Amino acid sequence: MSDSFTYFERFEDIADLPNDGILSRTILNEPALRLVLFHFAKGQELTDHTSATPAVIQIISGEVHLRLGDEMREAHPGTMVYMPANVNHGVFAKTNTTMLLHMLKSAKLPQSAE
Image (cartoon, rainbow, N blue to C red; front, side, top):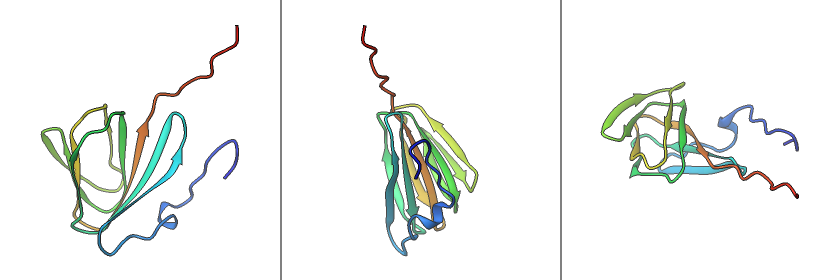
């Protein structure tokens, strides 16, 4: 990776999809953004939970049921969802699925010396 940018050509090359279970791997952790790549085997579930930071769910491959607050949505490759902090959500993998979670952190800018 470069010092000036981070480039991912194929998420499928980062980790193998498990035959059973859920694999999560942090692939970027910067002051303003944390990227977590998830691989779900068919039938696996992340039960309802919240996040203290705003987040974006991006479905890379597969099909999932997304629980967003009180709503259920079907998601597939190309689906993206923005969630403010503290929104209750959950994921159920209908098929083997790769999902990218973008956790938006508040960037702390350096203080200028005065």
